[in-house]
Image (cartoon, rainbow, N blue to C red; front, side, top):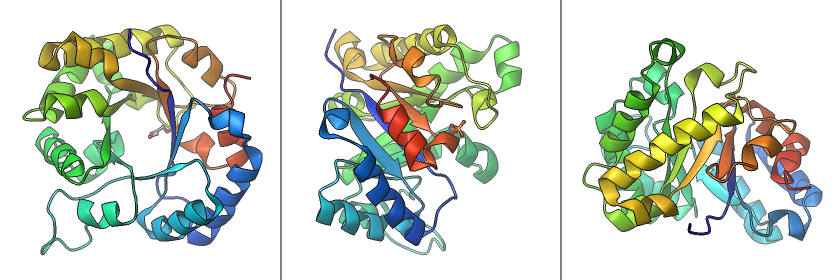
Length: 257
Ligand code: 13P
């Protein structure tokens, strides 16, 4: 087994303006000791309007937090009112971009094809996608979880180079567990993550699949992160609601203590 560095990421969704973002970043930095972030990668994905302020705060205070974005378009530039290009994000030292979050798929009609274009565009600008996959409650109850996530993985990685697949972060986020307070058990999360890893192996080989980091997302809290992270197949978490408070997020990052 390759050593995979755990990755804990905050997805603020549409919360916190740039003033709050600056305060949050400073508070998080004050709450975390060096040992808390040694061996754990920490990422915060705020709304677009916060990125520049957070970049400045992170740089000037040398805070060990990487910047992520929640979305991007796949084109470099053009007549796409309201969209933000990956090139613009790369200029802000954004390191990660979420692609295919279930809210984008369900509310904004993001298809597997669009997710694939985004994954390629994010890599083209030397950023790393956090590719989200996951099933609805109906799909789960119909026994379709594995087919759904395998299909999403296959579609997202069509035409993507093996080295890039190996470095992509995947977030398994069962839709029924997002914002519901109902999280998958560590057993359930680990079982579906194994299916995701096997899907990567089928596309890009076993070595690649051992390198891919796969997070769990869906009602992750300070109280359940420890049990999830104990599982060797679970390489981190993508945290929504509980990441909005820097104290809760710091407790999640400190899952080892
Ligand atoms: P919650 O942690 O609020 O369930 O959100 C999970 C999520 O969608 C992270 O991307």
